[in-house]
Image 1 (spheres, rainbow, N blue to C red):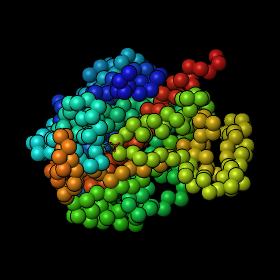
Image 2 (image 1 turned 60 degrees about the vertical axis):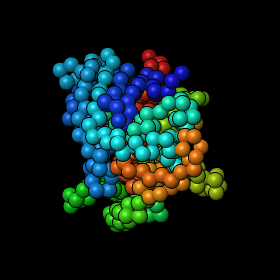
Image 3 (image 1 turned 90 degrees about the horizontal axis):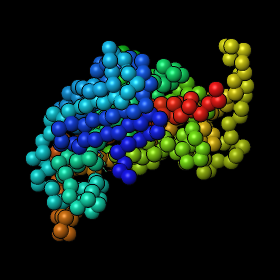
Length: 373
Ligand SMILES: Cc1cc2nc3c(=O)[nH]c(=O)nc-3n(C[C@H](O)[C@H](O)[C@H](O)COP(=O)(O)O)c2cc1C
């Protein structure tokens, strides 16, 4: 009934709120023998961490995880794996003034209407703080798919407001490109197009000065995915990836390959031509010359890179005044004092990657279970 678990063969269950003691994930179905340490988890947790640059929320969380179960002598045991990330820098008083007011664009009203009782501190369970647990699980999933089929998931910021990055070959963007520029300067906005990245930074700084926020698009690419992942008809890979991404806060759109642009194309322009390619082992591999389909056909991975984009809305909490109502229906003015990201995109990247990796890990294990011996 409740919606705190995701996946079948690789299944994550999370609990935790923004201002509670911490966030925890239990991962069931992770095979034994995968090397896993706190340092492995820290890499992506640091990419998601608040306070990582002046462009994001200044909440200070060290986000050092504790592996509570499922790892012995540095390797997964195959039993349930539990990871805890404690909350450290809650400033719940920031929310006292607005506890009876509904933030426009946020989940305050719907949580109140549904449960009649709400942890208003920092948005409670609706806060993106819960995604810290998903990122930890995503690290495990990334390791699993890397070991199983050389799978890689790399996300980046494709668009902030009207500024769109030029990325000619999404499959070639590396994690290194996303995290730093060739001269070693940190890529604060996680956009591989340096010129556009600078424009994005300027835009984010200017909306912050205006006490406003801005939306954008993240593109995520999964490569080396074997052909055959996805279970028709309800658990098609495209359906499960969409659910994974739409389960994230602030995602208002998901598209694959050419996405919504397919609406104006003719079949002759859209269809990707098949070709047979000699592989190293002399076996012929079927590939497509182009990848407008985004790596899935019939909801089953085609062996081409999976290319998807998620549209992320502007942060709803603003320190400028907005009109709203209280929980008793009185008109009110709201200003949100907490520390908020003026643009969610730079921190969204590792979170989106984590959900994609979790889906691929789950579908890989399901694919393996269903394969004829
Ligand atoms: C990384 C990340 C950080 C977020 N931080 C904030 C924030 O500081 N303030 C805020 O109002 N919303 C923030 N959000 C978005 C809200 O959590 C989200 O808009 C809210 O829960 C309502 O859900 P919905 O947008 O999916 O409808 C964040 C989202 C993400 C992905």
